[in-house]
Image (cartoon, rainbow, N blue to C red):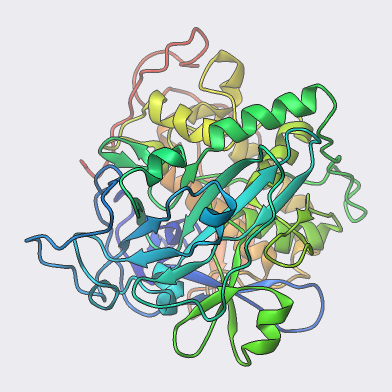
Length: 497
């Protein structure tokens, strides 16, 4: 979530473009935001801290490297103030207990050091990286979570990570989140990424902020255990405040331009820039350490929307926090897969993270979807074609926000500089998602009008709740494109990228 304004349409945008202030002529903000847990009373929420500086967009990094560690090249490192991309060094055997307890290392790309690039955890608001594991015992269906620690390359943890006790034959998925633009996985050993079954995107076109290890295998095993009755996923429940079903990460009431991304991990950051896992012992021992985390759709749901609606997210014992219940990206996806009623919001092909050179790409979309437990692009997922995703957020999310604006306005904003409460924040986010998904290309009109204060924060929002219907494909061919499994249509990126 960025810190400076830049022209809309440039790709890839950092996630700041999603939680951004619409101007008279919509512009995607470049605000790279980190998230810091608020210490105020009431429900435990996160306040998102804006970082200073202007981050320009950058082209996707190359495909994941498997070198032992980043090595210097002749390429001059980007200055820290301008850099938006980092590498994360994945330890050997990342799916084992020892691998989970080995710190991941954040560093610069192209041989740049953390100091040269700004890729250090002290700079979490701009370029912080976060890792989260979800663990399945396939014999019992029991789930747990674990938060592998990320440290700045060349430093030591402020406290040694907990070594988790994993069940026999445990199936582990690892999700990555980033507060910058592109985070590229690099193996600590030549085989580390292969051992972890890691996916950073297609060759030459990474997803961007997010990546995965072993997600496809994890969800295949989890869904099998669920089908035979071994794994029990709880119901979402009903909001006592609205009388409606509690939302999930696949609800069109909640999703934005790039759904199902980033993690809910929290670390402790000390005054000297070291990090530690967020558990009771470390909090007591590291006086003054600051909780930090990753701006994510999952955190918005679990820490803001659910508490406001009186709902409870799916939780499991956190092995990095002495078994205290915790959330995770994979738990949210399991809950959504079990409970979300049609229409179901899956990652659409116009999500910036699955574009290739500004064009729709089925293979990249399917790879992303597989790692978050979603069905591939096909006629039976037509509610999330680019056109229908736009139509559904325009019609359904506007109705949800308009109907519940008084309730949502009672809660605090994740980013006060974007909206002065949860309602105006979400309205602003929807307005920019419409723009960044090129929804106008489908003959739709942006249904949100936002009123800004003198500082540029949304203080009010109104909606046109008249139902809209897409009028064209936006990229050639007849709509819906996937009805007969033909998913090769492309949309022109207005930036010419």
